[in-house]
Image 1 (spheres, helix red, strand yellow):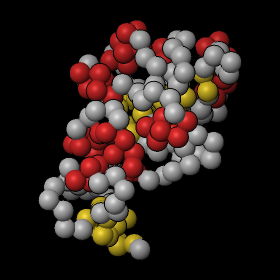
Image 2 (tube, rainbow, N blue to C red):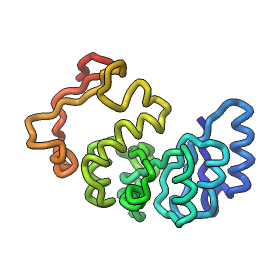
Image 3 (tube, helix red, strand yellow):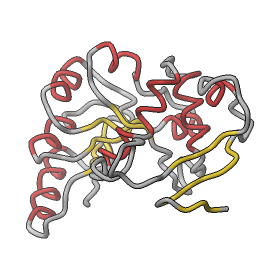
Length: 197
């Protein structure tokens, strides 16, 4: 993959175009970091290059929503980054209202999101972005798998897919998972059909 931070004071849309064009020569697929602080046309340019995903999207305008709506590029929202650097959260609820699918991810990195805890990401999506637990779980499982080109093998409990599962402690409902943001409810984890510690 190839990523570009397309934003004011970083890479411009014209520079994004040059970088993505160069990446295509080496079969690098775009996953573009865009609209974190401003909307400057990066989403539209990324979609022109069939970007697999556009990531961040804390600042959106109507044209950005329209471009996403008519594309196969998936929005990837990173609420733990918003939490850590104290910026607005991406408009997940508005995306749901506009039928725009999105993934949730941790954006694990030392500069703006030093946390890979997806339970916390799902909690932030519900608490700070205002979406329901079912939407958060879908965004972090099947939609997350789509954003990594892996939805044919992972992301849902489906015959023929890898058995990647969690078992929780005894809880009343899956809705308790984002509610109890400070509690680890996971009892066991299975990866590729094998239980791991």
